Length: 168
Image 1: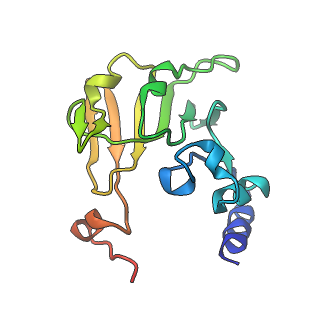
Image 2 (image 1 turned 120 degrees about the vertical axis):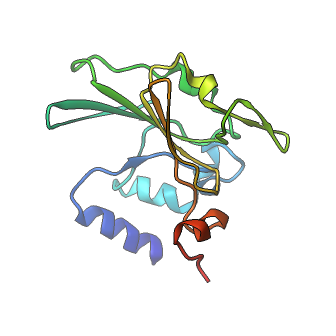
């Protein structure tokens, strides 16, 4: 019933809903694990679309913004270096990418997992990264002209520091 309610809510907005799948949306850590998951139901009802390989362009107020995304892939962000601006309908003025990987001040390791820092993305074609996976709110930072927005989870550890309350 909850997935049906969410689908109806998304349908009622009459706007497209695009995004990616995070590690909690997937079984087995890959898109093959989407089968039978709530996100698959939303996709199959046509109210939600994965951006993986299907960038979208939004035109508003004189801006042409491309939105790209890559779903969780065992915490890797290497695929973001190959995201390019889609110029078939005109060159986007901005390129935003949505990802789900560990992000930190610099590239390295965190508890045996690869962590990606702004230095890793220096030569990418993306202007702004919106990043999930890290539970603590790391805020938004601009490093050498690229934005990195890692908002954290409103239902996990970092939420208390920023005025949110955990689900009980």
